[in-house]
Each structure stands twice: as structure tokens, then as C-alpha cells.
Image (cartoon, rainbow, N blue to C red):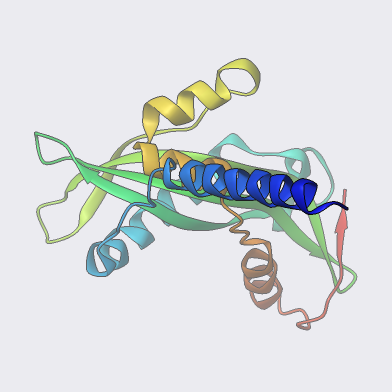
Length: 188
């Protein structure tokens, strides 16, 4: 390669490097979440998430495995924003699975991975209660819902995050059903 072509190639790489840095700087930073507040709201949002899914049922509800089936969820609090009236809007990235056991194996029915937004108010006893919860529609409105429901940084985390709570769900279910830590998982 001639020296002139090498200089032009290096110059092109430098331009690409600058553009990459600029593009990286254009993404919104992940929201800071107060650890104490996260600790206070986490059990409340977890219970509401599991209760809502349990109420809806799932695939295992229509099978011989229904009696022992239950929902297990793991969630990551992405952001907590306070509204003008003191309501907390808690944005979550959640993964849930309907599980039961059969023959020393975890059996999975329905599963869901989605962002959620829960509105919490104080319960008058120093804690919180869920006033409302929402998740995106399937299909066309999914991404629009994320942009409307989360801050810019929160939306970036939900859209591009690599968090996965599957191992947590499976470990919790194995303990609940008194299965060995290496019990396999099958689907219905």
C-alpha cells in the first residue's frame, strides 16, 4: 500500500472513531436509583407482579399440573421517578415463568419477559402499595409504550439491557419445590 493510501485509510479510521464516540455520547445515561428506595419498593412490586400473573393463569392451569403450578418472577428496578402528587413511578425490567415440578424436574408453562411500570403510593404504615401497573401491548405499540412510559435513560436500559433473571427464577423454584440445585427444566 502506498504511503498516501495508508494516510487516507488512517484518516478514514480516525473519522469513524470520532463518529463512534459521538454516537456513544448521544445515548442517555442509565437512571440513578436510590438503593434505600429500591430496597423499600422491590418487595411490593414483586408481590404485585406475581399476584397479577397468578390471577391471569397460564398454560399449566389447563393441565394436570395445575395444582402445584405457580408464577416466579425476577425483576430489575430500572428507575424510580416521583410525580408531582408524590406517586412513585417504578420502571422495571421483569422476567416471569409459570413453573411446577414433575419427576424431579422443573416444568415451565407460560413465560413472559417485559418492562412494567408500577405506580406506588404510601400505605400509611411507612411502606408502599401498588396503585396501578402497566405493561406494553404485544406487537406494534411495544416500542412506543417504552418511550412513553420510561425516561430516555430508562428506555435505553430496557431496550438494550442485557439483564436476565432466568437463573434466579429457576433457583427460587427449585428451592420452593425442594428439587436439587441442578434439576433440569423442561417446557410443557
